[in-house]
Amino acid sequence: MKNNILNQETNNFSIKKFDWASIQAEMRNKFGKDIYESWIRKIEFINEFNDYILISVSTRFIRDWITSRYLDQILQIVKSNKKNINRIEFVIRSQENNEKDLSNQKKHEDFDHEKISFIKNSYLQYNRIDPNKNFDNFILGSSNKLAFEASKKVSNDISHYNPLYIYGGVGMGKTHLLNSIGLSLKDKNKVMLIPAERFMYQFVRSIKLNEMVKFKEYFRNTDILLIDDIQFMNGKEAMQEEFFHTFNALLDKGSQIIVSADRAPNKLSRIQDRIKSRFSGGLVVDIQSPDYDLRYKIIKKKAEELRVFYSDQFKISNDVQKFISSEIRTNIRELTGALNRIVSYSRIYNKTVNLSEAKIILRDLLNLTENKVTIDLIQSIVCRFFKISKNEMLSPRRSRYLVRPRQTAIYLTKILTSKSLPEIGKEFSNRDHTTIIHSVKTIEKLIKNDSELSNSVESLKNKILYNKDNEI
Image 1: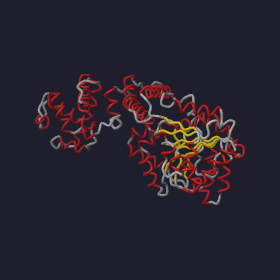
Image 2: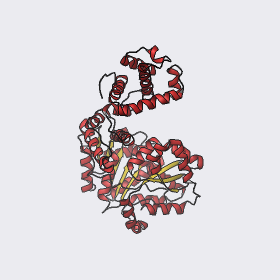
Image 3: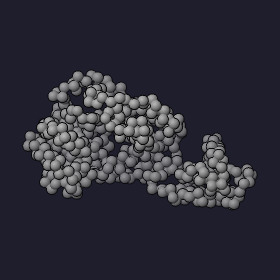
């Protein structure tokens, strides 16, 4: 299907492609060799369209990591080569999907016989049901059990609950449930899965192209309509009018409607009262914040999946898994994001992350604000640990009993704060930045071979960050 989509888009836009090789070279210079080889080199350029480019990576994990860490900078590099580009879209490539796409390509070419309906001529197809998000791999807990059971019921008995309205905070699994419903029904029904933002885009586009008849046909002839994040329809009166009539038309013909949002129907702002009334007339279920047991089950499951994928290249200790489950309480997406950080650190440095390191890696998620960690605090704690005065540490003397504490303090300052090398040098009696670099590299090398120094550094980290003397 991807090949068909790409061919279709290429016909719509005939634009001279820019030099991806030169952009790769710029990214290598920008991010450095290690980051480039670990992440950026995995990107493959697919095509360029009117105002965006389409790229691919091999896994969703890589896509999410690149998106959260480097996408803004990559976009700036791309824009410097082509000013009209204002966004980047991803597709996930895999051998299994490619084989499936080739075998189904002929089927997808004929819109009238396609079970999963979609808007033709859109610049990117958003009606993609993800086979990786199904009921079997939805992790169940007390906070989401009602929403899960309702979704299963709808999948077995269409129109029993109509509409089904699922609401909850960001990253709680609403999209996973919508996708699971669509996946279970797509073989025997015409399914439309679309974000509310995409519905708006198609509505505006249809008005501009004078294609409202087609728009109505696409949306009113579906058997299952799943709309994600309905709260984004707020304030668009003309579009809400069309949605209301589409909603009624689908109910009249016995189609199933499933809607997700981040709040209850009566809490939706700038949505017509009659639409909120229709939502409230069906089954309204919420997904609550995950409790500890559910968070731990999710972390265990994700860790096992990643371990299989990376062939035992890393190991996450049970203590670290419990720590993440205990401390990251906001939502499931942030929980898996924290796990991804630990995994990446483990793979990059080829080591098992201990509890102390996990706290440092996740310190922004744990609300350990950096302004609590000052260079003065680091210097004071290191001096007390090594039983020297601060004047001795900052002096130009190069006695061995002073050099190691000084280098340790500089190393901790570098990893626990965002201060630049010149700023650190200034706080250590105006030492040159080359001295700072040498100190950091020296400690990094020593802690790999000197277990006593390694334990001392870990103890100092815990004392600085958490005011604890011994937690390694």
